[in-house]
Every structure is written in structure tokens, then in C-alpha cells.
Image: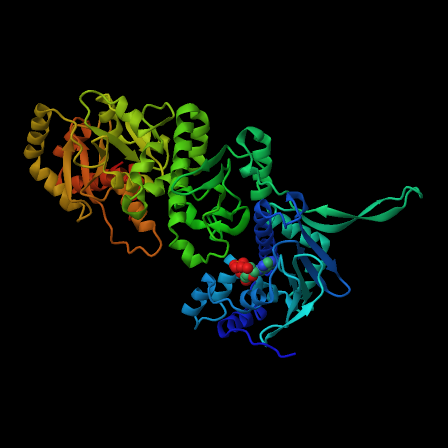
Length: 626
Ligand code: ADP
């Protein structure tokens, strides 16, 4: 019999499959089962209108047979089958595959990129060559008299010949490769492995996937002994939980499903199950975990939702479905609008997928908004665990997402009543207040001790406590909330005084001009100014920043890997004009004034949480003055 050659492109792809070093070769089973399921679908739909189809819904099935001795794995379906022409056309060509187009574009990078493409999407039938050195397909098309056998040992071509087969359908026999140093192919001849793979990838195929399973059971004849019992069993559960009516599903069902599917020991704090119809039709089942996933903070962590096309898993972590700020969300999306063999590249440009992603984002935001409103305790717990993600979300991409996230933020504040939202803050602002005040620091306790706090609190204004590094950056991105600007109380331009107060302090500064100039000189360029202030309550000194960069931002920016230490806040040393220390300064001789100034500057730095350039000098000066 004459051997036929594969079409050139198919041959290339086939070569790639045969020599694949791809680690998830197991997806071949999913591909073959999906094909079988599609073939059954076709005959099933035909049966609805065509009396010639003698099968009814419950007769359809997919069977898997393992033969360790002969190293064969056989997949049988009673679907629509293929004619000789179809065998030729379908199994001899693959030019239309999206994955394959991707391969052509990256032709010079043969082994790396291509293989990840195989893994993400499979390339259907051809993936069987990843695990087999010979594949036989016996098929009889519905309505055809003759059956055909297609045989190929890989890239050198294939043969088609007539053969015997009673009923319509397809039998695919994989001759599993011998094991080698790197690969354990024999696992695909083990019942437990096949059972596991079916449950992993094809659990929700609508037709039963059956296989003979052997079990050890007690021998009824002989006490204490066991015999092997062999049963034909259905491996897949067939109905996915997300396709069931919500009323049929109990909370435990969701929790169990979550824990087994996403490997967590703790129930999720939120379950979002939705069926959407409209621009895109899809089912979504999502979970907000109570704790961060175990590898959440590692580089290996990949965000994403599982993506199903009509119950068949096509991608384990579809990252395009989740924005970064929801990277902790687990779950899946099932849509009939997506094709099974869609490639990563196509997926990125897929219009349907974009619509779905947008809808998912909205659903998650709604869920959190609801939680914040109805179960404050739960939301605060959530926020303590994942709030940082939301803050980064406000800051990321030049604040593109800030409007959708700003009302989900929580901050501690000088009210000491736990967390406050921006909306609540603005809602309880004093009549005379027109800014949202905040202060930065390591912890709420430390911020509460800042010298600047008192003056703001005296006015009856609440101060938000920013304890995460990203806080101030996120707020800079927001710029304002409800038309109220944000103001750092440790910045120089804090405008809290009445006109009369301003006049008084300006005059004091004017009168002390020479003194303040001398003090500035004593600090040798470390501050841009020394000023008298009337806002420091009982504290003698404080350090504030002028301009855009606050003290906290300086710290964060300079701590970033690869930062050049160039970012500097412009510092202003403020002296409390009402404090006895101000008088003392005025009376000091030149040498003592220098020492006092250095001392005050150093202590102001310590209060602000900044390092001292020369701690020894600081200590010496104290001792000296004592
Ligand atoms: P895809 O399934 O993406 O089209 P495949 O390479 O897996 O790509 O299959 C090519 C074609 O071969 C299918 O579209 C289908 O028409 C046919 N085919 C594959 N397996 C079967 C089967 N078990 N029964 C009937 N037709 C099949």
C-alpha cells in the first residue's frame, strides 16, 4: 500500500510533537476525549431529527481500554465517525490551527516558545504523538457502509485502508512509547493515572467516560483473603457544579469544590457564582480565599482563572481574566463562545474574552462593595489580608483603575475607631475643613506621636494614618476624593491657621530672621530653611518637607532596588515659637547656637524616623552641653 505524505505544515508540527520535551504531555488525553465528545455531540444532534439514528441520549459513551502487555491505550466513541475523505482531510492537515500560525511566526525559536503553545492549548489529535510511536484510527462514518483504518508512525506519513467495524464511531489506538531516562510513558497505561487525568481535565464532559477499574475486595469464600473485582466505571462526574442551578447547591458543596480544586484547607470567605447572558454568555464561579494562597508572595505565583469551553478545560490559569489587584481570586469561567483550540495569542486579542474579563472585574468589585456594606468585620479581615493589592491597583497603570477601587480602601485614623473609608472620612469632616489630612509612618502608634498631629487634632480634624509604603503614592494618584484634596500634615504648606495667626507667626519669623539664617548655615545645606512655627503644640521641633517629595516618599524611593540615592525631600526645620527652647536659642552665643541647632535637627530627624548621618557627633554634643 502506498504511503501518503502529510501536508508540509502538518509534518512540521508532527515532528514537533514527536520530539516534544514539553512536560505536560498528559493533555493528549484531554484532546482525544474532547474530539470524541464533539463527535458524539454531532451524532446526538442528528438523532434529534433523524430517525435513522438508533441511539438515544443515554447510549452515548466514551470508553478507555488499557493493555499493559501490548502497551496500548484505546479510546472508543460511538459518535459520528469519519469517512475515508474525512480521515484524510482531518488527520492529514492541520494548517488552520491557531497554535500553528503562532509557531510559524516564531519559527526561529523552535523548541521553547512552541512547546509552551502546545501545553497551553494542545493541538488536538496530533498531541497523541507526544506519547505514542504509532497511532491507529479505525472509524466508520454514520450512514457509511465501509469503515477505514488510518495508521501513522509519525512524520514519515500515513496509510488508509478499508477495514471491518460494525457501528458508526471511532476507535483510536495509541501505541505508547517505551520509557526512557527522562520520561515515564508507562504511567499512561495505569488505571489510576488515567482516572486522575480524566477527573482533572475532562470531569465535566457531558457523556460518560468509562473504563474497567480493578479493586481488591474481601473474598466471600475465604475469610481474610482478597480477590480482584473488575467493574466498568464512569470516571467523570459529567455535571459541573457551576452549571447546576444555584438552588441545588449547598454552601458546603461550594466549599468542598473550592478546597479540592484550588488546594486550600480553609473555606473561602466569599463565593461568587454567576450565569451571564448578553454580549458574552458565560458561567463564572469565583472564590475569595481567607488566606493568601501558599505561594502568593513567591515569584512563581501565577494569577488567573481556569478557562473552560463548554465544560472542557482549555487553560488552567488564564491571567487575562483577572486584573493584578484581584490576583488572589480563584475560580473558573466556562463559556461556549470560546473555541477549544484557541491559542494564547488569539486569546489575548479575543473580543469575547475581553468582555468576560470586564464583567468579572465588575462582579468582584460588587461583591466586595456588598461585603463592606453588609459585613464590615468580614471586610476588614479581608482588607487586612489583601488590601495592599487594592492599593497597588489604585497606583498601577497611572491610576487607570483608581475610580473603581477608591471606595474599597480602608485606613486607620486619629479617631482610633478602627478603619475608615474615604467616604466615611469625608462624611464626618468638620465644617471648616476642606482637605483630607494624612500622616505617614511605620505604625499607627508611631504616627500618633508625631509633633504635627496635635495642631490638626486641636482643630477637630481627623488624620488618616498611612502605614503602607504604597499609601501615599496611591493617594497622589487619586489626587482628590469628592473634590477634597489630600494634605500631608508633615508638609510645610499645611494651611491651618487663621489670617491673624498667620500674620503673627510671619512677624515672629521676620523678627528672628538673622537667627534663623545662622541656624540654617549651621546645618550646612541639610535643610532648605529653618522656621518658627505655632503648630507644634507642646513639642519643641519638627521636620517637614517642602514640595512634591514627602519624607516618607524619600524613604520609599531610596529603598527601592537600584535607586540612586538622589531623591531628596526638601527639609524644613521647624522650631516651636511658643516653646522655651525658642527663647534659649535667641539668647545663645554663636558657638552654642550651632550646637543647639545640630542637636535639634538630629532629634527632629529621629522623630521623623530618619537616620542620623553622625550619631557619635550627636551623642558628643549632648554630653558637651550637659
Ligand atoms: P480540532 O478538534 O481542533 O478540529 P483535531 O486535530 O483534534 O483538531 O481534529 C481534527 C478533526 O478530526 C476534528 O475537527 C474532527 O472533525 C475530526 N475528528 C477527530 N477525532 C474525531 C473522532 N473521535 N470522531 C470523529 N471525528 C474526529
